[in-house]
Image (tube, rainbow, N blue to C red; front, side, top):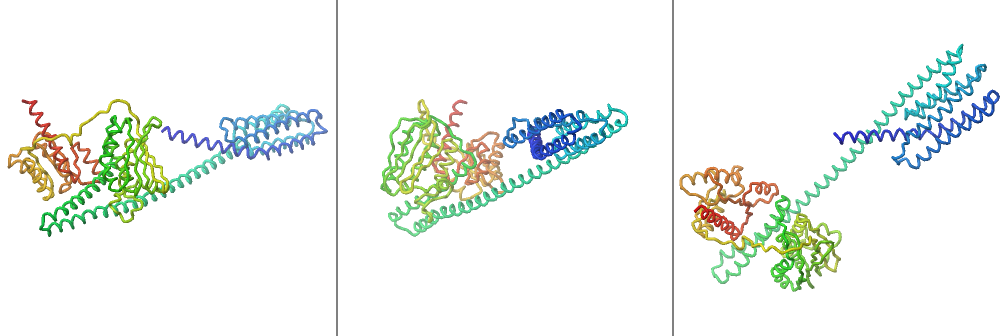
Length: 595
């Protein structure tokens, strides 16, 4: 409501501005006419009225004309100055002019000279009528001028009495008609201005909507093109390791010599790891889009992060024959250690991959209350026009053949997303032929570093006798899961749906300690619904996890909203065992408390 009122007020202000502009537009011609008519009146009355009175009246008229001309010049120079009440000033000028012309009806009134009265009345009536064209855009000015011009001579006729009394009534009747016509014309002008401004507003809105529509269409086309490129690149990069895996599997099937099969196993494992790496990066992109990454800010020692990255990436640099160096530091920052490590790992590995000779150097320095972590390389550099494009998914420079040794084109897209989540501004400086420098600006922190043990790396518990219910509609997954879990000493019950699970539980007497369910089940059912049904039937909140290979952001948000643990396919056995170990330890702790 407030917005609508303010919009209407702004619209009325625009109409008023138009009225004032039209008023000042007609002033020069009207004042020139005033001067001409005043001079003619003085000339006609020169032998009838004393010269001193005529000259004084003419000078007064000229002063008023000069005042109104001055206002016009000032308006044209400062029309946009909202602090000046131009309409009020012009109304005052109209009052002065009306008083000047109205005084003529008193000063030059000669009852005994019919020709003088006739000429004077015609002049004053003409000036009143002429004001309609020049002043009707602003009614207060027009009404003031007309009344002050005609009323004195009308009253003079009425006071004179006799035959002149009727002329006074005629002057009043004429004045009323002039005011009425002026009022009608003023309304017509304002309505015309309103319609014109509304038309301009509609035209502007139409242009804005067309511009927005065109921009939306361009964005849609760009998104569609990006999607097509994304799918083409993802399809190619997924098929490459799968093709290699199929060939290695066939080679193993035909290979009878265990010693010769060893290298094939190594290559097969490498292809599987490459495929898993791609799927993990696709998952990271989807999790970024779904907004599921929640940073855990801690005080982080940059030296510890640098040491870990050096141990991990040094072999990659040695393989390329380049030097990887980290400048020692004592600085601490406020960040999520895992996310910050991922950002730096992606940038450094990308720098190593594209640097053919020379070095990659990592260091940091204080800058404006932050720590600027710099990754510098002696690679080929990046052209300025590509500084934004390289942060798009699957966008790669100098890799049209999609060579996986040069990466997948997702690393910098993940870097950009993580930097946005952490509010760590990312900066790129590069010169073609002279290398590139990536700068990550991280808030500086003071205090002691909290050394938190990673649960997945430290937790290990015996799973012997741990009862697990697996719900998955894929027979191969159920069989593989039962095989792996059974190998860890677990008791396993596998079902293809919640109904199948409940039926088997009722007949077998199996009491699950944990549930692992696939997110997508048959008949449009989800793993979250299956877990809810099973928990209701058991009457207790059994620990449960959802397995999903879906990377659509909307699906990831739905799965995350269930509050269940989310495990992404392909899940590493170590990760799965770690989760089960934590649950087993929690179960043991709760049993001890009960006892």
